[in-house]
Image 1 (cartoon, helix red, strand yellow):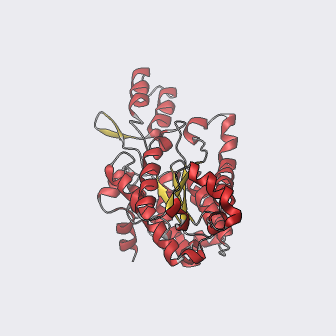
Image 2 (cartoon, rainbow, N blue to C red; image 1 turned 90 degrees about the horizontal axis):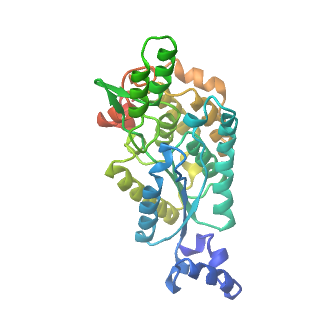
Image 3 (cartoon, rainbow, N blue to C red; image 1 turned 30 degrees about the horizontal axis):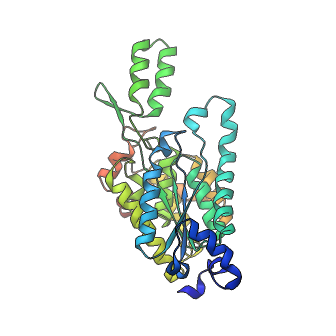
Length: 332
């Protein structure tokens, strides 16, 4: 395997002794310079609940890379919380952050000649940002979604962040009092995870799973559940295996894979932001995709899922009944 490792550029030969000296400082030993180097792009931050749990997942992925006989190198990338910046000047940075995330991943991975990468992300722009970088670099890679937030509860109904936005409108229209507004605010986001309905984060995680760039069932798991961390470890093992077999993203992200992703987005009643992001990812992967393709696919795909914001259920409900594999099975 070692012959096709691009990390040999920095690990092999007399001239690379200083490079190895630096790597020894971060934990490499004599036997490690023959191993694949796998980046773990960690989107952890306390800026938003979406990314709050990512450090746990990144550390599990890091350990699993080592367990699979490769060497991990963890590095960070940014996020913007649309939920917090919405309605302010800060929202102007949101879409730009997608490109910053893509550029930062590509910069670290290519500058350090890594052989593969596991990207761990949570908030809306983490996912398309990661996929743009993965498509451009075309080295073995996988995306690990940080997971969905569990619903909050009030008077027997499930709450999500949109419940809080709706409560503002209800309060402004004198339909609820200030106490109910505050009750919704205090309960809407009970812990770590991305917004609980089929909003942009869960839409993009579903599309990436359907495309084959994240593990089956992983896109609808709750952030705080043990299976999410287990999935991060399995994802890391999958990347090491992909390096051994030189399985590359563009071999997976074909035109048919994008059509599958779009079909799943339509079936789950996903966010319209998927149009924006899937076109950008396809462009990076050099796959022909146009905005009209979404309409062509929409005309033959039924909406199968009754999910917030248009319906009543949340992503954890979808996960309980079989997640995205179940949706794809029904579409077949």
